[in-house]
Length: 448
Ligand code: ADP
Image 1: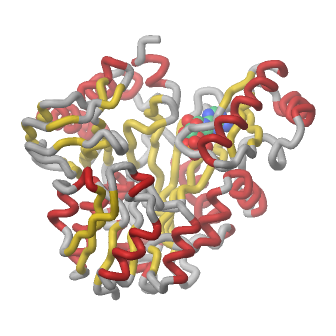
Image 2: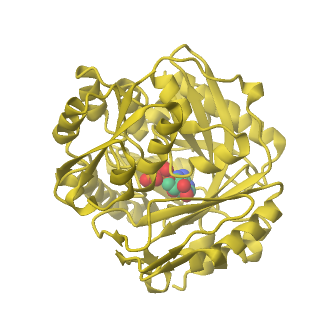
């Protein structure tokens, strides 16, 4: 097992990894930007190195600086968290060449899955259903029009290098398709340096269901059940829950089995998430693999009782999976609300600044994963998520009641947060009935 791990991240996920390491008797090395001098991850780690100015391109994305910190700190491994360099195959490769274990998949698996069109081909080859669409990248607008006619409008144009909903465009007729193709290519080139796009049928009112999978270096693969992440605003997840409240037992089993097939087909190791969209008839289609730990992993931890970060660390160090498939329970219902420093009444505009007062909710079944404290200043340079409120109860109905109560208890003064918005979702009849699709928030809760 490792003696020391560097965490190439900040915020709540850096704390989450430090917590797992401490319980495992592993020392931690934090890295931080000049904007994060007063951050909790810097305080809680055993050692910390400043790696540059506030902007992430000058600090958290600087591979050279992170590797230097790893060398000086003499670490055995690096945990990348999510975001930043977590899905950067080049960084992963550099770690390998420096003989530092990267806590995640191999660079090869990461590279393949990072290209969504390649991931789609692996899914097809593995017998996992994909959304009807183009066989490969769109080279020519005429081909696109032909394919769109075959699969039927509306269609969705997706960037092969895409992420975070960027480069996606819906088109409902040939002339719109031509314009949207150009827009998607331009947006994708600017955002990812790769303008490759492909087509998928636009599935109306889908649910977003994803499966947590963990694979060791010895060929063992297990799933940790599914999460429903349909409550999204502009393709960004707001609320996640486990298990799915509406899928039939047969569909849940089929979707989890498909995820395991995908992971095997991609020679994937460590923790990963296979994402699907599900239509109203419970047909499910693969959309992508997230080759890292995800923001929403705690809901899975709550229903299974397994610490996924510890599992990641053990697996990266060469240990076998700690349990077989039939030893992974699915108990009760868990919900997570992402608390962002944003003003929901002003189009979710980021609202960084000093937190003048803070009280964390508690009580049975409540978990708050966050790095904030009274007097902490949320910097303007990074993602606006400042915490995750997670509840776990015996039934979904009780989990909703506990979440509503916990949201009211949560006190964050000095900045606006999305907590009040979550209260609106949690009291909406469609959410309570478990009927949300991925457009529910945009349709029902955001005035247009
Ligand atoms: P990204 O990597 O940019 O987040 P994804 O492929 O994961 O893109 O898709 C993000 C979201 O877009 C999904 O959660 C879903 O809400 C929606 N989406 C993706 N593919 C389709 C599709 N074919 N039809 C309808 N909605 C889709």
